[in-house]
Image (cartoon, rainbow, N blue to C red; front, top):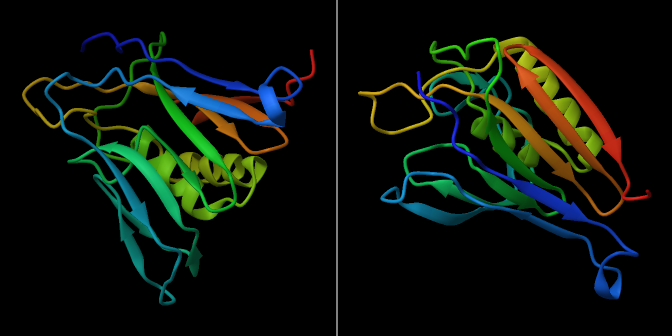
Length: 184
């Protein structure tokens, strides 16, 4: 298994930003030839008992999902980063840990980004969504379309809204989170 490529994300809160804005960003460490797309999905209502097909597995759908804008590899259901109609932004980073990442198909970290955005109206709600799904379904599977070389990673997330940010690091179904509001 290869080492996770370097990827970084950041957030800056007022008063360290101009005009009281929150600034959020992420670089992509995806393969150079991979198609990245920016896509929008409108808020939607879903039938009771319906499922949502993520990259590798299907999970229970919620009654309503928020409108989202994503930056994602074209072949993935999930995304590297995105934002929702409530101003929640989430970015995913691949991290290397002592614990090997599961090659078994489960939710990818990028699926968890999209699910957090679709289901969380605040950074804390999105964090709770990701943690709950992680504990229930785990994470795993190939992060690259080319299945000939498995690239399975653990995931870290930056989850932001206008008031606070959460750094979430995961290893398998285990996780740790820390909150910041930009006050130092």
